[in-house]
Length: 127
Image (cartoon, rainbow, N blue to C red; front, side, top):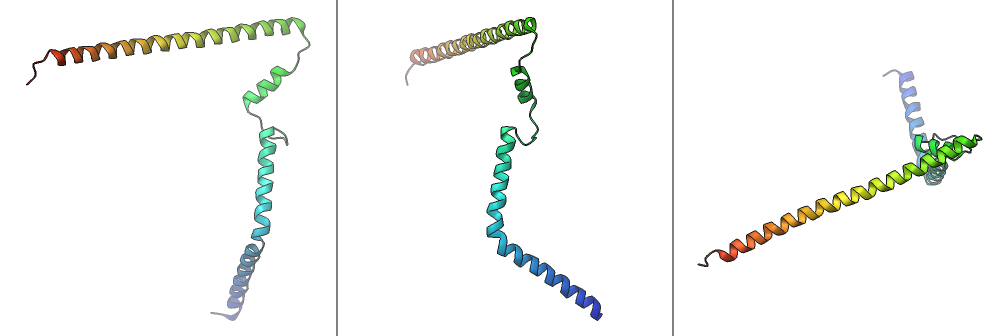
């Protein structure tokens, strides 16, 4: 191998070795600092500061909380939101009644099958 190629190869190896040693020596110092920085960034993003992107739901919530200066629209919006909340509550109550009726039917079917099984077992001749 030519001498100049060998020198470059050794210099490159020394650079990689030096970088590896520097990384290993500073890792205990840099590692926790990086972790703290990442935690701080995560907290900032979850709070919505720092220019982080907000989800559509967060954006709608913020926009709906902002007062609008049209009194007639505010009255209409309030009544519609109340009506929708009432409909949602009624719908959830309906779903609960529907689930209860289905559960009752399934339980009655189970009881009938159980009773028919036990009566047929009692009426069967014993060996």
